[in-house]
Length: 111
Length: 117
Image (cartoon, rainbow over all chains, first blue to last red):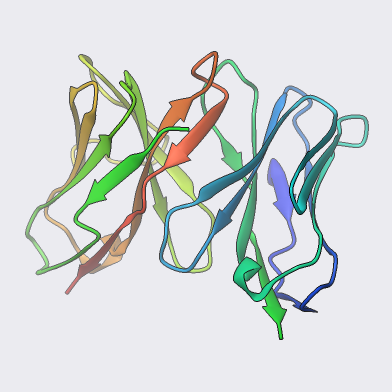
């Protein structure tokens, strides 16, 4: 079993839709949770960063962490074609620097 | 956040040759940098942790004699793929840890695509 599980998709939605991306993890020691966006043949770009449980909002993006169920989510409101990319969740214990990534979900927002 | 650059962005080489990839932290002094490898449609896999002034720490299964890492300064780390073979063709990405505790998040470079013929 992988430490971080993520549905690879692809996920296709119409422009303007609300997108929900999710990951589950197994290591209860994870304290830091991140979402990265990666366009094709580019490096990952940090979108959201959350410590412990709770919600965090930044513009059209909302990240949620539920440590009791080991579940993390990213919501994208009013999705745009420019949001088409692969979204990677990542976790860390905090003290060891090492990030553990999900496999990434490929998202396509269609006109 | 930190701004990270990589050079070259794409390199093609013949089998058996060595290739050097540079990773620079442009606005932040980094005592640690990370090197990842990503195969098509797969996630990032950590290869090694580059430490300024000391030896790199390699992940299990990564050949340290094949992937030479040198953290020459607080802003530069290099990855040399020695005697490259077609199976080494991949997307290599470096990152710099950044945050109040310097361990919480990582900012990534744009990546280097290596094609070995």
